[in-house]
Length: 349
Picture (tube, rainbow, N blue to C red):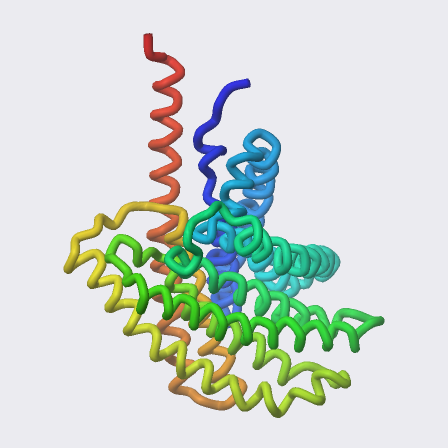
């Protein structure tokens, strides 16, 4: 069987492509840019299908590579992008009335969240590859919290369209939001301890650290949606508590933006780490888009025009970042395909 190094080395976090494209599409829909939003929805849906094909192919053809990723603290939690991408796509489909497609996707996302939520930490902590875990903790761990919050958002969106079991939808929305907040706090402590104890070099400060902001931003969206949900026992019991956290979480997101931008300057300008395409660049697109949507939601719900205006500016930046990363990815794929074809046509003697 022919060896495909590009499939064997496929990044575990490539579903961030769907996450980033989907959230920018949602943001464009929120500001009335329907045509552009629809284009990004199509791209997100196509990418979702293609990535599933590639991931299944990799799991069948290169199971040892998948197992290696699952036991590696630096890569295992990136698989949570599958959960978040599924939920983000489902939310976007609900906005265009494709509820019949969105609901099964949410069910898949919930099932994957439960399975991955126990399997991936077990693989990393109990069947690890032997290296020190704390020294290898990185920004991808925050995707665990993002996956939980994405399920909360999806539950709030499908809630009005579910005729039976609305109480259970409310329970799962609050449960996944609460777990996401707790995970964010725990992961934040671990990442901070890693930096304090082992330091971090400019080359190690990779794009997934931006997820620290995106994970908090999606908690804002999920919390706002829960507060606006219809009445269920669990939602009614926690509505006031969750409402009190939303503005605080958004403020922390805003505070993180200069920190992350400054760290990028330190990495690429001060220490001249080359800015080249890597799949993890999609981990920047999603947080910026998520912050934009969080700002739009908070600004409208709490009647804060300044926050809403900031969300529109952030959305423009997110669209620009998305376009730049997309072009870089297409160029990377084209060059890799060209080199692969050349290797086949002119094999080494």
